[in-house]
Length: 89
Image (cartoon, rainbow, N blue to C red; front, side):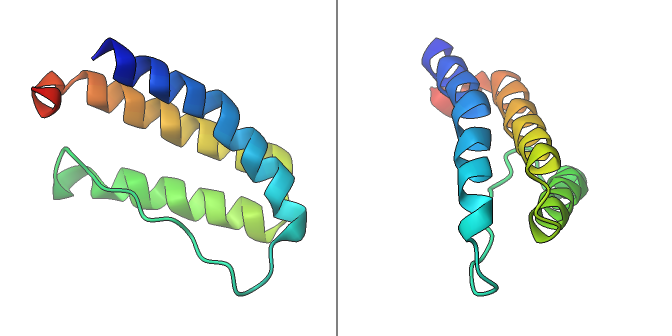
């Protein structure tokens, strides 16, 4: 569980940077990445909303908003994973 938490903390810092670096080079043909849910369909709206906010920021070429959205999305996923240690047993 500790390794998962550390890995997600690393993602919270690294992926927003990678996103910021890639936004200026994206074309209309690039697609979003799909994330899997652990907590079931009742909370799928959260993930979908996060993805829509992230895509909106990318379409606007707003690096600051895109980094913020991605950081929050990764952080929430880490927190949710920490609530489900059974996944790692």
